[in-house]
Image (cartoon, rainbow, N blue to C red; front, side, top):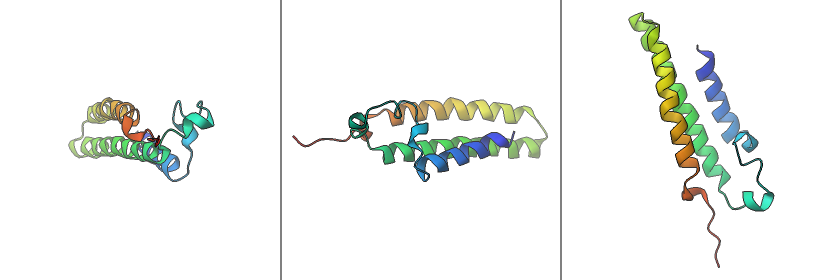
Length: 104
């Protein structure tokens, strides 16, 4: 179960610092002109923070599970992390905050 939070941390690092923006769904299918209308660095930061947040929740669940000797805590925190993280990523990354304003 430790694989998933480590994978999320690596994914967050790769998207933000490795400039692998093609991993962001929808961005890679846009034309270059459409991509120029978005602040991809800001979106990549949102993805890094979302991935790190989900990984943190999962790691806390793994730690609490070992501390309390209850395996079900890992499963609950996994789904809680996804239930919080996925809407966060969708809502924040699709907000108008990351659309580049063109001066007219």
